[in-house]
Image 1: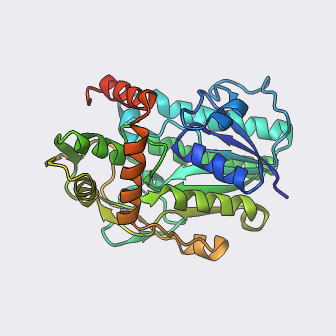
Image 2: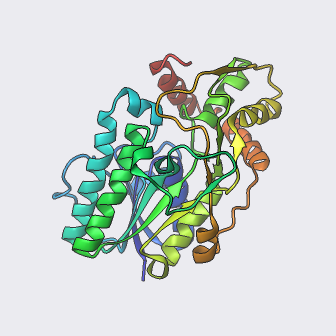
Length: 324
């Protein structure tokens, strides 16, 4: 029975929302991240600050978790093309956490992988969990996730750690003011600035935060029934990224124009997830349409920007990249 859950990456977009929801579901949650969250003071008071790139021999927790949910990652595809060492960090973090689980006797492990491991997909084809191919890997980020999955399977067979690998896809929503597509588009649209899209043909599977969290919570509740498995958690629908930008412009009544540039190295143009296995094992059914999700995201963002430290963080991060 799962009662105590360690969540790595607990200060991030998915992590913050997941910790909040698990707490509401009466799990004992141990948040762990390299830095505090700016979104929830209650989570911060209990967050274990830890650099997962370092061995975890000295990591002390108040209780040994029944389940580890490993979300922590350098998750920007293009950033890892520019700086591949961040991909190595992803692998090292997964290795160190698996070693912690092996030594401490934690047998349940959820790994947040990515739709990137499928590589490029044909338009209109929904990708099932058994259709990955190592030669289709297009970026160091993808390689780090694929390698993480392989390492987890090795620990399953050698050390009895039971995994559920979750392949997430373009999660968007609250707690995100990063340079990822949706918050970046909102940032530009509020200022009537040109929105740049890299690749006119891009059509991806956008998943609203609440739906992604619902899938992860269902896994925690049913872990012993669904492990070991690899499961897609997404909306199951493809949307052109240009249409995402248009929705944001419409909701903000913006005068922004859209500029189409060449696709960037390492990025894929097409992906839609087959979520039939998630439906079968978890009774997972995404509820939030893209139109409703973008509306909610814009409303949340406008409220969040009233907090000075949130605005300062986003502007600082974008200035580092010359995008502000």
